[in-house]
Every structure is written in structure tokens, then in C-alpha cells.
Amino acid sequence: MSSLVQMHVAQLGIDRENNRPVVLLREVDGTRVLPIIIGPYEANAIAMELQGQRPERPLTHDLLKRVILGLGVELRRVVITGVRESIYLAELTLVRGDQVTQVDARPSDSIALALRCHALIFANELLLDPEAQTGPEFGTDPSADPSFLREYLEKLDPQDFGRFKP
Image 1 (cartoon, one colour):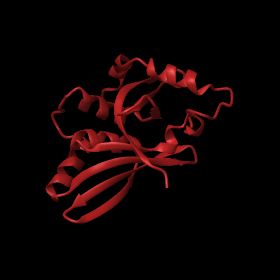
Image 2 (tube, one colour):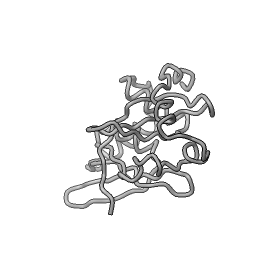
Image 3 (cartoon, helix red, strand yellow):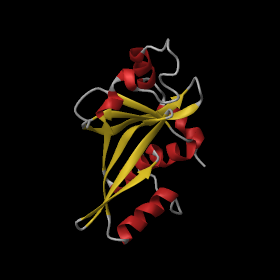
């Protein structure tokens, strides 16, 4: 079984080649990164939470946080668990008393919810190996150099997210 690495949201930006939002997770005690292409609504939800913006009415992630807390449950952690058919997978760990429940979820929703609930974010260490990054945006081009990709993603412009506001 592989180990887990604690991550944090380092940056949001736009993949200019595909014109899609990217969330860049960076390991807390290191320099490795995990770029994940996400949808514009999830990017907006993450950006709003990072900027401390509160919508007039609760968004889906705000509603889910209220439900979790209302049921007396704690979102303990989010784990980006793997890749299947070029799609990243995630899992929520919910705790109520001594009962632990694992819930399958999309990474983008998991990250947006983790930020709202102040939960820890982890990634399977195998995903941080540049050779193993096989999401649809990364690793499908055999000529792609992992170090070039990492530098490119770190230079994404977070200002570009303004156009994803609903």
C-alpha cells in the first residue's frame, strides 16, 4: 500500500493550451505538485473560498458543509486516491463518533469541500511521481517533458479565473 502525502492548494489557473481551469496541489513539506484539470464551476467555488468571498445564497459546497455539520459529522480528510481511465479519483473521510465512512467523490468537489470544512488534503504518493501523472491533460503526449509541464503549470495566471464567475 502506498503512503499519503499532505497537500495544499498552491494555485488556481487556466491551462491556456486547453482553456480549462487547473488546480495545482503542492505537498506541504516539499516541492512536488499534482495538477488537476477541473470544471469552471468547481474552480469558481475553490477560488471564492480561497479569497474569503461569501455568496448571497449558499453554493452546493456550502450546502453540503451545512448538511455535514448539521448531522454532527466531521470531514476529517480528503484523499486524491488514484487515476482510472485518465480521470483522477478522490475519497472523503467522514467521522461521527467512532464511525468512519469513506465516500467516493470528484477531486474538485473534494477540494472545494475540504477548504470550507478546514479538512486536510492528501494525495496518494504514487500520483506525485512525474512518470505516473496520467490524467487526460498530462501524460497523453509522449513528447511531454514532466519538468516542462511542472514549470508551465506553476506559471499559470490565477487572474484568469475572473472569467469563471457565474
